[in-house]
Length: 365
Image 1 (cartoon, rainbow, N blue to C red):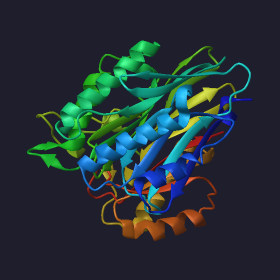
Image 2 (cartoon, rainbow, N blue to C red):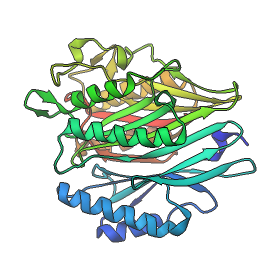
Image 3 (tube, helix red, strand yellow):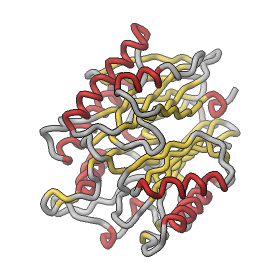
Image 4 (cartoon, rainbow, N blue to C red):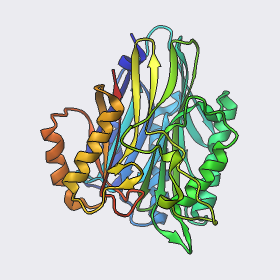
């Protein structure tokens, strides 16, 4: 069975209740008979003190749930769930003969390693600095330092990262003259500069959170034979984000580093492909489509995604909405599109003030 058939993505949502109760309800939903590689929880703490308390509780409950068997990568993202109290995204794998899954931990961060005849795959994340006492730049530096320790320990190069999720508190806000997203982009560029990116940068999402500082998750891969490989996917309707001009970039520390990611990343497994779709919005060329409503931004965003997946089957989507009042409109639009897949709906600021919606996902063919 091909990797694309064995990797699974699910979303579970619970109604609003006490945090501990919501976590317990979601953990009871975890799939049986599969190796869980990554858990991403989405919720709404009141402030950063409560965020840290919830994050610690969550990690403790996951550890208790798995016991001595080892835990998957775990993240808690401060984004309100628009159709529930707490949501959990699950990345899992149907292990068969020739697959080996190992759970390990470094600096308190659990992660999973999958190895088979196709390659060696790393699922790690939850990387963060001191949310309460560090600024965005220092938190980003610390998150990448922690990631690098695991990459080094497990024999992965920076250039082996194929998918990255970057969550940034109040992403479009400024500390003085320094924009949060641009601060993060400058740090990411420094982290990436020593790497060989001959297969393109990772697919990535850079999205706002209400709280939680900087949080980074990543997947990485080293392939065992030439029929399995990663490659960048461009969108002819958009300028590559890493090629943006200064005109559309903000400033941080008097620098304007471009966002280092591809519009999508294809991972080929013999005759099949898994496609990581980066966070996608209503941008044409390098300019936002301004002065249009949520419905028009949605259609432009989905057209961009269609360009990237070229008829592949969508497996999962995350929908980030700037305004909760747009939730019903977008749900109806996705129903009309005939999609019967897991979809999460989250309240989040997109990386540009004028953008109302961002969508990311995973597809296969």
